[in-house]
Each structure stands twice: as C-alpha cells, then as structure tokens.
Image (cartoon, rainbow, N blue to C red; front, side, top):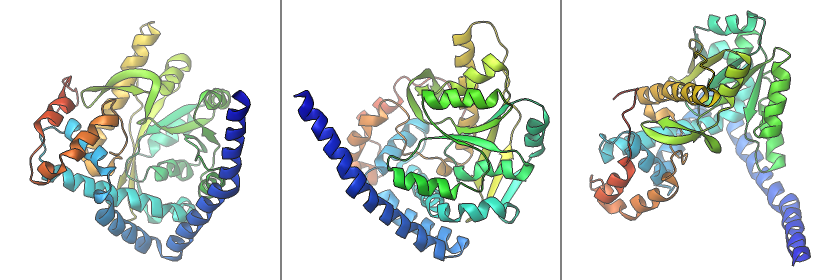
Length: 343
C-alpha cells in the first residue's frame, strides 16, 4: 500500500512537472506579453475594466461579500456590492501591472507619490536592522519600491508560487527591487534572523491567515495572525514601520511611511506579542476602513469565512433584492467585539 501511494505521488509530480506546470507557464507568459505590449496606463485600464465586469460574477466574490458583511454590518448589500466591484478593479489592475513592475521600479517618480519617506531614510541610517510591514492593499508589490527611493535594499518575505516555472517569472519581474526574496516558513524565518543580524531590512505583508499564529482581533473578530514581526521586535528591538500602499488614479500610487509601531516590554512574551499584533492589525484596519475597495476581501481571513460564504451564495436571490439573509447575517456578526478602530 505504501509503495502504491509513493508511486502515485511520483506519477502526480511527474505529470505536474512535465505537463501542467509548463502549460501554466505558457499561459502566464502569453498573459504577461499581451499586457506588456500596452502602455502601462492602457494595460491597467483594461485590467480594471475586466475586473469590474467579470470579477463580481465569480463565486469567490461571495467570500468577499460575506467578509464585508462581517466587517461592515451597517452597510447595505448594494454598498457591499459596490466595494466588491472596486476590489476587482484594483485586484486585476495589480495583476496586469506585474509585467510593468520592472519599469515601475526604475521610473518610480513618474508614478509614485512618496509621503514621509524620510522615515524610511531614518530606518536606513540608524545602524541597525529594521522591518517595513504592510498588507494586500492597493498594489502591494509597489510598496517595496520605497527601498529604491531611499537606497535601502529590502529583503521580502513572500509565498512562493506552487508552479516553479511561474515562480521564476515572478522573480524576474521583481529583479529591479534590490533585496533577497525569502519564502515563508521556518526556513525562511531563520534566513530572516540571519540577514537581520547583519543589519539588513525586511518588508512583509501581515494580513494573511496563519493556522499556527496568535489569535488577535481584526474588525472585532478573532483571527490567527503570524507573530513573526512581534517576535523580531520584542527579541531584538528592531523598529517595525507600517507602510501603506494606495492606488490613486489608474496606475498612479501613493506610498506613506508611518511612525514605527512601538510597544513597551512587560516581560510576558506571549502577552507582549499579542498586544503588538493587536496594534499592527489596528493599523491595517484603519487603512482598510479608509478605502475598503483596495483590500483583498477574497481572503478567508476569519475562520467562518471558509464555509459561511456558501450559505450566503445559496441565498443570493435574496441578497440581490437588497436583503441580508437573517440567519447568515446573525452568524457573521456573532461574537463581535468592540473594535478600538471604531466605526
């Protein structure tokens, strides 16, 4: 039986490496070449058009609607649908801007407005390692370009693509942003510690679910959150600086470097970690509340998001009439805490 399972795994891997992955690479290359042929503004506009007209019709958009109903229980179905349309506009724009990322990384002053970037210069010049953290908001790939602006290589923590051939392509697009790309996981975390001991700087996104993280509130509901930023700040006293990426109009952006997120150490590592990540989540929540359409709502960020979106989808006819299904709504807002971010 064990040999049979081993044979199946090898056969599946061979199929992926020899058939599926190459086909995915061809499709990705065609996609990238197509959008690279257009000027950046045209490519972004076309991506936005596709996103607005196709994205909201996909089933995954009901994950976004359910999440939005949890986060903003006061909003009507029509208001939530408008945010979903805006989310898809931003999301597909971000995808089609990938083939232009090398150009953006070099000619950044033509496209990016930098706010308070002197704080990044202070991070560069303080003679120690440091962290920039953000979220899947705006065009999140643009956030690391602040390192180009101030001459500070930024190592980036990311989730590598399942397809190794497509992964190579994504790395190619990111080549003009100096720094090492470190995959998520324990091996990646050890690499981070090693580089930071040599005074290196890191950028990472902290808004994805992590099953073995720490439980902290997000929009008033508990979520599992990766504690890596808190661990580095508390153990080594590295500064952690929030950086917000905003899409302005079309393929133009604003990067705002905020004050370092400080925390007083009490000696209780678990409590200090939780308190730091609570504050970090409140920073992200503030950004998202300011412009909800720019965040990636299709993340199954809350535990019930995995299943309850299906219940909402089943009652989509009621939703389209402007009515929130009472049973789904009650389940969504159950256990809501009072959020420090406020309404």
